[in-house]
Length: 76
Image (cartoon, rainbow, N blue to C red; front, side, top):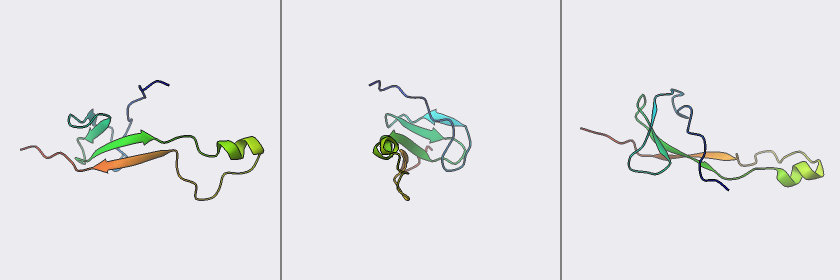
């Protein structure tokens, strides 16, 4: 399995696309519009067993992608 993934396309908080790699954390992104720092982490594919059996995925199932917020970097 490869460790390279597509970069974040937009900020999950403000929706802007002014994103830059965050220097302090591997895989974290800094939004220069809302000053938030976040990381997107792939957890897995949900509902695989249900899809094979023909059943619908459970209501309220966890999303396949979560956002891990971090404190915004403040530079002086």
